[in-house]
Amino acid sequence: MNRELQKKSFLNRILPWLKENLFNGVFNSIITIVLLFALYKIIPPFIKWAFVDSLWRSTAAACREGNGACWSVITANLRFIIFGFYPYDLQWRPLLAMILLVGLLLYSKNRNHWNKTLFYGWIAGLFFMGLLMKGGILGLAPVESDKWGGLPLTMMLAFFGMIAAYPLGVVLALGRRSKMPAIKTFSVLYIELIRGVPLISLLFMSSILFPLFLPEGLTINKIIRAQMAIILFTAAYIAEVVRGGLQAIAKGQYEAADSLGLSFPQKMRLIILPQALKIVIPPSVGILISAFKDTSLVVIIALYDLLKTSKSTLSNPDWMGYSPEVYLFVAAIYFISCFAMSNYSRKLEKELH
Amino acid sequence: MTNETTTDIHRDSQDKIIEITGLHKWFGELHVLQDINLTVYKGERIVICGPSGSGKSTLIRCINRLEEHQKGRIIVDGTELSNNIKNIEKIRAEVGMVFQHFNLFPHLSILENLTLGPIWVRKTPQKEAEETAMFYLEKVHIAEQALKYPGQLSGGQQQRVAIARSLCMKPKIMLFDEPTSALDPEMVKEVLDVMINLAEDGMTMLVVSHEMGFAKSVAHRVLFVDYGKIVEENTPHQFFDNPQHDRTKLFLSQILH
Image 1 (tube, rainbow over the protein chains, first blue to last red):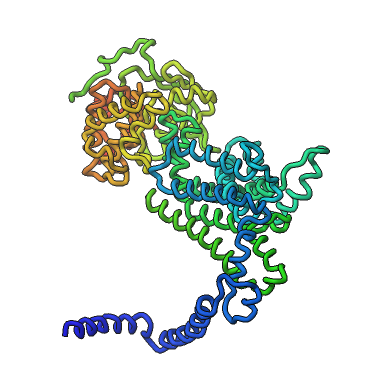
Image 2: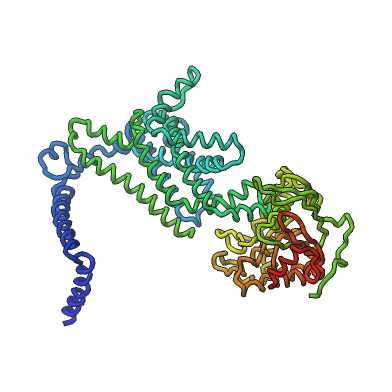
C-alpha cells in the first residue's frame, strides 16, 4: 500500500517534469527523441568497447584477437608514457617529485594555510624536486635533462610557466599604465610583439635562433629555453587581462590610497591589485589553462612531453593502431588537471567575494 | 555652538599651517584656479562654497597633491609641494582627506581600513593601530561595526568610517570634499555631528560644502569661489548676513531660497 503510494507520487513528480522539460511542444519533443536515439546509438557501444570487451593487462597479440578497447597499450607502456627516457631504475625519483608537487599544490588550496611557513615549504619543496630530477649529489646518480620527459616535464613546464608568467604579467600591466614613457613604450612593444606571434614561432626562435646569439661555448639548456618561451608568451596575455582589472578599479580607490600617504608599491600591493586581480580570476584561469595545454607544443622542438611520449608508444609496431586508447588516456590526464584548475578558481572566487 | 569668532586662533606667522601663494591650475585649456592666495592658521576652520565647476574641490585637492598645480607655491606644515615624491607622501600623511563618495577599501574590513595607513605609513605596531582605530570608531559611534565590510554599511556610516580612517593617521589638517552631498538627507546630520565634534577638538579643517548651518556654527571663515577665483572671504556672520559681492548674493539666494 505504502509502496504503491510512493511509486505513484514518484510518477506524479517525474511525469510533469518530463512534460515540462523534454516534451513541451512538438519541436522540442522531436529534438528529445532524436537525441535519445543518438545517445542510444553511441553510449552502449562505447561502454561495450571501453569496458565489456576491453583488455587491460594483455599482450599485444591478445589485443589483435579481441574486439574491445586495448587498454593494455597503456598498462604495458605506462612507465614510458609517464617518464619518457628517464633511466628505468631511477623513475621513483620523478615520481616522488611529482607527488611532492601535487601534495604541495593540494595543501596550498586552503587559503588558511597561506603563510610564511608554507612559502619556505615551497622553496624547500622545489629545491628537493630539482634535486630528485637532476641528482648528482647525495649519492643520487646524475640524470641529464635531455633524459627528462613525459608527465614530469609537462608538469614542470606548466607549473613554472604559470608561476613565473603571472607576476611578470602583472609587472607588464603596471608598466603599460605607467606615466614614464620608456617603461610604457617597452611594455606596449613587448605585449604587442609577443601577442603578434604564435607560440610555436617563439619556441622555434628559442631553440634555433636564440643559441646563434650566444657566445661560443655557452649553451643554455633546451628545456630552460622552452620554459622561457612559454613564460614570456603567457605573461603578455596575463598582462592584458590584468590591465583590464586595473582599469575597472574606481579612481577614488587610487585617491584614497594616495591621500593616506601610501607609496606606489604599497598602494598597488594593498589596495589596487587585491581588488583588480580578484576581478580577473576567470579570464586569468582561462589563460593559465590554455598555457598548460600549450606546453604540448614543445614536441616541435623535440622535447618528450607527455603527448610526445604517448605518440612514441604508438610507433612501436606491436602497439600500432591503438591511438584512440592512448589519446583518451592523455586527454583524461589533461582534462583532470584543467578541470581541477577551473574548479579551484571558482571556489577561490566565491571565497573572496 | 555659538558663532565663534576668529579670536580663538593665533594668527602669528609661526602658526601658519598652509600657505598658498599665486596658485594657478589649468585642465588643458581650462584655467580652473586663477591666482589663489590663502593662508590657513593652526586650528582654523574654513568652509569653501561656490557653484559647481567653480574650482573649489580642485583647490583643496591641490593641498594634498591629488591635483598638480602648474604655477604658484603651496607650503603645508613647512614643506613645499613639488615633484619630490617623498615630500608629497610626507604631506599626505599629515593631511587627512574625506571624499564625497567615501572611497573606503571594499576588500578590507572596517578595522583594516582604519589600521592600514598607521601600520604601513606610520609603522605603528598592529596592536596599537587597532586600539587607535577602535578609539576613533567609538568617537564616530560605529565601534560595533568594526569587523564588517564597507558594503554592509549605510552611506552615513561609511562616511563616518572614512572620517575615522583619516583621523587614525593623527593628521594636522583635515580636508573635506563635499562630505555630505552623496548622502541621503536623513544621514547628513550624523556626519555633520561628527564633523562638529572634530571642530570642537580644535582640528584644522578645510571643508568644501554647501551646508550653511554647519558653516555658521563652526567656521572661522567662509570662502566663496567662482570661476577659479576667491571672490569673497569673510566671517560666517558677515558672509551670510552682509555679502559684499553680487555673485555671492546671487549664489546665497539660490542655495538658501
